[in-house]
Amino acid sequence: MLDCVSQQLGNTPAIARKSYVHPDLITLCKEDEAAQNAWRESLTLPRKTKYLSRYERGFLAFLSD
Image (tube, rainbow, N blue to C red; front, side, top):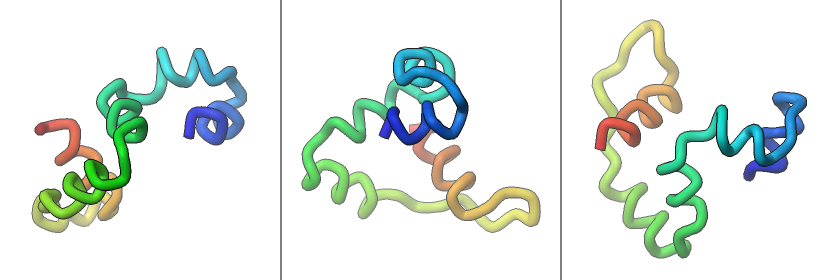
């Protein structure tokens, strides 16, 4: 994941990890598939807004937990 992010940002994976990617997201990605699926099942998205995409709302919900 960090390789892809760092390429898109034009930085090294270390810089992406320290500056751009939330530590909880890195932890979730390192967990096994069962834990990731359990997290997906428990995710409820906030109500629709005209300014945020589904993915942005989902990420904000992830950060608020």
